[in-house]
Length: 331
Image (cartoon, rainbow, N blue to C red):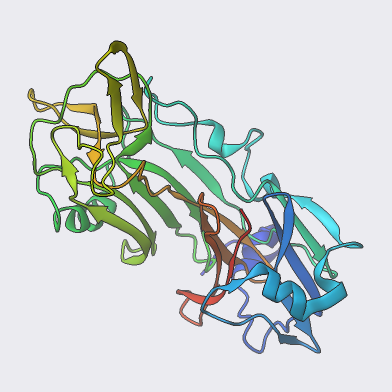
């Protein structure tokens, strides 16, 4: 518990530690998240009861039909999601791994805007964001143990790369929880055709929620060993992710690359010759906001894919994230 004198307790911390179960009632109103220039509803409270509780994803247009004229936030208050972050002026996704292979960094899929028709403050908990470089990995043992165990199910010779993490004290006990993305894939172009040292490599994108004691909760992702050390021919619906024109050898187009061990045992960016056209599962981005006015933050996650669902998690009495609602997004 927080031992600070009552008059010095951060009001954000006090709200984060409220029970929300009998202590803080839901407030009538609606909450939207902007995505693909469209505001999508992720909460609708009427008479103190949450209307959007389906755990399986629903298509946005079906929800629009059900909600009718109240679907659009015509008279709602728009908020900039950067207010969620501590001391962060720029878009957190402007920073990427410091490597020349990056063409562009992950975009903020939530498009930096939320809307509320209701009387409450959405940013009830402070969040800090860290983007890691290849040269400065975090060295967190709990993270490494969890992600390496996942990766080693497919490959024992694939390096762990932590991309980014969000830190926050969701239960107000003075210790930070975190959400972490690990991925060894990047979008890239113009790389030399140097394959990884081993044929038994893997590509992965994984997301996990870590309690303050280091215990992990899986939040999705994939590990794939369907990678070839040589380019894959375009035949039988199998595509190569690295293409070149034999008649114009100067023309090389690289779509995806991965951090793998090279023949010197160093981590290097290597072309991916994977089975599947331009396949790369992107990392997730998050929001931590109060979507229903009960003084507790909910967690929203979403990968940067068209039609990918925005998933809303509420925190139970033990402050563990539980799926509450998911909505499939427009292209």
